[in-house]
Length: 291
Image (cartoon, rainbow, N blue to C red; front, side, top):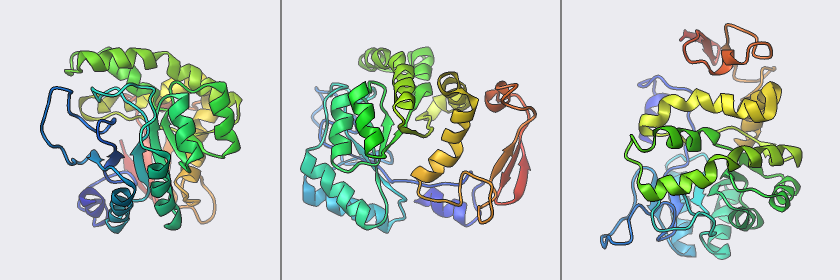
């Protein structure tokens, strides 16, 4: 919320910024950073908070909206960085997830869930989650459910790619490296399947820390699967629909007027979108900033 306040007050130069607050995780879930041999308490940091139980989760959601969160994020399956949870196992009970989605829904907002496996994705969608982040292990049955539920998939292909190339040098734990290998090739297959089934597909990167400078490579990876037009829609109008803000993601009367002007036509020259060495002009709310 501090960064959001700084951006709003003009103290920090930033893209348009929305946040969820720390992601909610069960004990021993993807947001719990402790290894099995560590017997110390962990409450929360800027990235994750451990919250168990329906009542505690309702309080945590209300606190996030009090401090300006746009939406809520939950950890609904195991993950790469967490050391004590299997990738595929669903996390949080149905009652716990429904408590979070109920609170968010009554505020006119929604819940995004970190989830990789069909089991975890179905568990989340059945209990009211709007957006699935990652979804690398998606199968046909689950894609059909997502399409029928009008939910969204936000693939993050570049995260697995970057961790495969740079994870060891960044100190990635051997357990995490093994988990990441399972997700690396599956991500593109899941994205292709979701597209074929008519799932709403947004765009994300999930890169943090030393890997942040690889974000534009995620554009290239998504274009390789979806093509230029669908990748552009993922990054603009579909993401805007997911964020529930019709003024974003399109140029039309009443829109905020955000745009990126490239030095080439991406339909003829796709690298104009993702090559970070090439010049571009950023227009935000009608004001330009040459980069």
